[in-house]
Length: 152
Image (cartoon, rainbow, N blue to C red):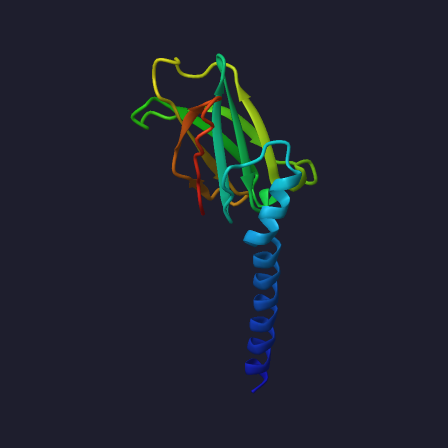
């Protein structure tokens, strides 16, 4: 009976933690957050959202990651038009309290040639060494601002 009570208490605490996290990053919260960001995402998702836009010879990469501080590192990788052979473009060592709103804005000054379609993706690494790779998104031109989306 004593163990059963502990299990109930632990279950209740887990439910509270899960509900708090889900509420903090709900679609309504993210829609409101998007209004305050320097870059306005065309569409925003719970989980991870990324847009890559070619501006002249550079590519601007905009990233929104729920609870970015759960990661030790966030890597931005780029590839050719086939979405293969990804190489590291940017490495972010996540520091507590540094990324307001879980938002990153990066510039790739040496992107793949403008003659090729380019793909970018997010790779995250936790302090436990768990690596997650998210689906790649295409780069859009500044004038059409097509959106690439990544979801958890």
